[in-house]
Length: 201
Image (cartoon, rainbow, N blue to C red; front, side, top):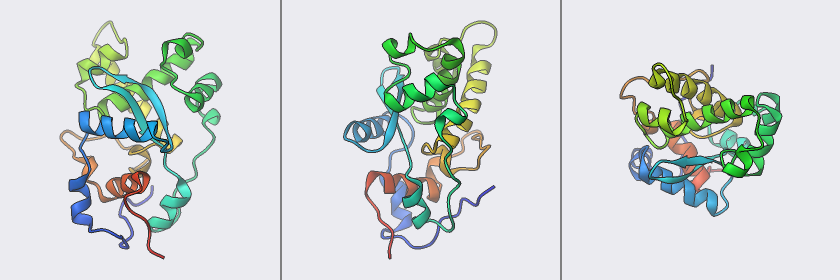
């Protein structure tokens, strides 16, 4: 398990960085959406109810490795751990778009909804009942199922190199009221992706 302590060589003041970036919720969803739409490397993963499309930052391992102490874990090809159709859909567009979703198998759709659940909870900051509803989870204790979906989804985003999960411990699951978005490694990685900070030579 890697350390989550960043190297101490920034071109900005660390204490101000976390304050300048939005915490999970509408403003973060809007920021990520606009940057992915503008060409920043990332994925689309459905829409958050009432908030619009969700973009997830894709971290460039080489640039991150230069910024932090030591190399980052390698990101394996998506098709090595995701169903092939889902991996192709994720790279080519939004796997939850109705036209694309209709071409996926039941197995593909479950993995896609796991990614979706993690993004809804961690980026959009939705309540568990909202996550369950958005993911189409019904039956006995849908909130518990939504939690399980998000837990698996976080692991998938970690392997994909998605922010913020890639910059937290591999099997990380947030504790109650944990303010993970203030973690210096998480905020620094987002600043790099946004182009607001560069490494010093």
